[in-house]
Amino acid sequence: MTRPFTVVLIVPTGIGASIGGYAGDALPVARAIAQVADCLITHPNVLNGAQLYWNLPNVLYVEGYGLDQFAAGHWGLRPVHQNQVGLILDQGIEPDLRLRHLQAADAARATLGLDLTEYVMTDAPLDVSLQTATSGATWGTIQNPASLLRAAETLIQKAGATAIAVVARFPDDTESEALQNYRHGQGVDPIAGAEAVISHLIVRTFRLPCAHAPALLPLPLDPHVAPRSAAEELGYTFLPCVLVGLSRAPQFIVRSQPGFMPQPCDLWADRVDAVVVPATACGGSAVMSFSRSVTASSATATRIIAVQDNQTTMHVPPQALGIAATQVSSYLEVLGCLVAQRAGISAAALKPSMRSLSRLEP
Image (cartoon, rainbow, N blue to C red; front, side, top):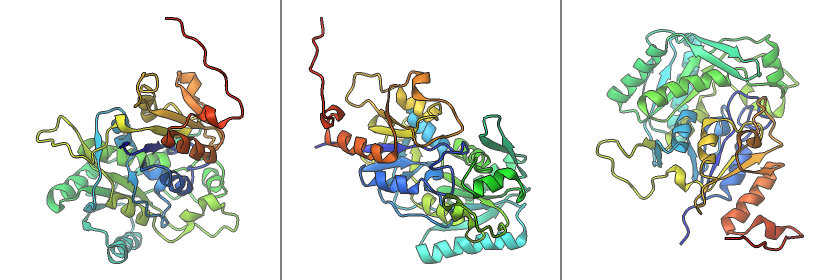
């Protein structure tokens, strides 16, 4: 009996990926790979599409910092049937906009059957600021991180939350060139990097699933919005996809934790068969961790597949880092590689010519 075929799909946040750098536009890629893999592990940037989402029972929704810890072998993943999702609302959100998000949360409870705890407001505005690096990648800061952590602790201790959704008020900059470029399918998502900072902080501190939805005022209508950006033009909130993802996000486990008991469903990094990543963005922590198994003379070595079509603002190809990667042109080609790998078929056997075996000297 073969073990489950497990794939990790990574599209880093805030680096202008041509696929996955917009509003859930890598979700079709995830859906396709989920048809090939027994288990697909990916992160909110891939699966979040504002009010759009897709139920994929064999896909694990893992926040970026948690994915890095998983790849390094520090944490494992334990699938669950249902989480109790706690909701944090930034005190800086205006009353009308706050009500829109609470109604979205109630709608998720009533129409999707999600299990949400009572919500908490931060005791101070989070005061998010946005930054852009010289590479074009985006990032950000929050001025009151302690307020965010106190709110999360309240949900965990008083409401029994096992996953945390955060809605922070982000600055409106409707006239900025970066935003206009993003809406027209160019450039970098101006808020993605700051969103990652928020979720990383909670996951690192509490080792619970977390994802973030920004609170923004609706943008004026623009007839030229690109299809890849259009999901963010719908309604007043990006919260629904976050709640859906967190509702069944796996829990993080640590072998050294007191009372730890392994379960057959637990997943560890040495069970990952392949990692799919943009070819110019191979310098992230998770890819670097997985790549260390590639040189191991073991049947469990993880295969790195680098996709050239998915261009980013980064310039970190696998060869520059000494990573042995399979270079492919497109995600369609990725699917072929994964099908062959799962079937145990050498890619060389699918080409019109094949070299003869050469002799190794002892």
